Length: 113
Image (cartoon, rainbow, N blue to C red; front, side, top):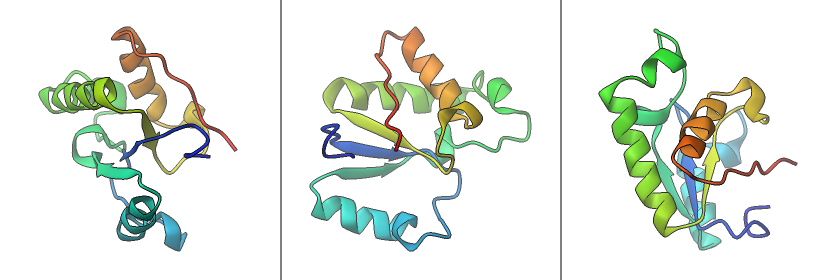
């Protein structure tokens, strides 16, 4: 699906980049994505979910704004896919990141199975 969507970089926005599924643990993703010529970047410190004060409130912080700025620069240079635990963006903090990107003029599409 990543290749079909011409993704060049996977940006992992999981706060804790691990999974019950072996292939989706950070260390394994870095390997298989590299083999597929796709870069992997973890941005869970700045864009990860599970914020004590709630994600929408967190979006007003300097840390989030810096993460968004970094993501926008990356998007201006490469075709990027955001990755998180939730399959659907409806129940995931990716929906908030997507809206912030759209406000900045970025066209957002969701890659769903």
